[in-house]
Image 1 (cartoon, rainbow, N blue to C red):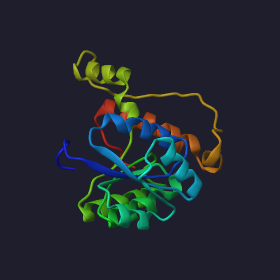
Image 2: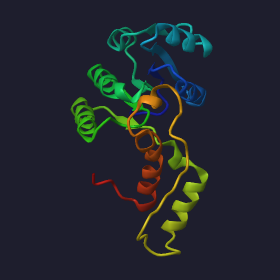
Image 3: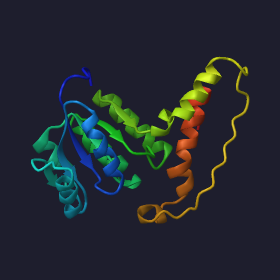
Image 4: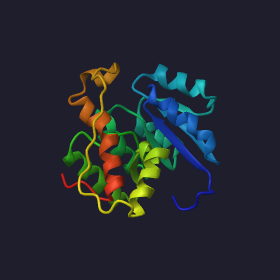
Length: 198
């Protein structure tokens, strides 16, 4: 996306609870419109479009058809994790940039497939990592970069949360690792300025 002042059109895929957070952010982005809503439940897509006042948006269950009809710049992938691979591949095939929910993919093989597909398409494919913008984490990064305590040699993290959140997460394997610890891993990447090796 070359010019931050140009109008952008987006299609939102996955109209569950997390889609509200994404749609709440839309007014803060000048020129961004939501041209379509896609969900396996057409009622959920129609409800979300109406709830946010996008009456002219195309609503459907078939992402390819909605993309062909709306021709957006970007797809917001708020679908369940198992759908990230097909949603992203279809979006890239239609020439769209993709900004999605975590986790990036169900496996490293799928993650590599998606990155390679984005590179072939010449499109941006990014996964939301909102906690790296938390004010406390940003202060810690600045403190570490100041060199006040020297080089980082070890990073440890603990979190305590129940493993049952309801919905798709109750059947998701390794839910705490894939759906929650990803925030901790990303914070570690930010603090250490290192990329994962596996």
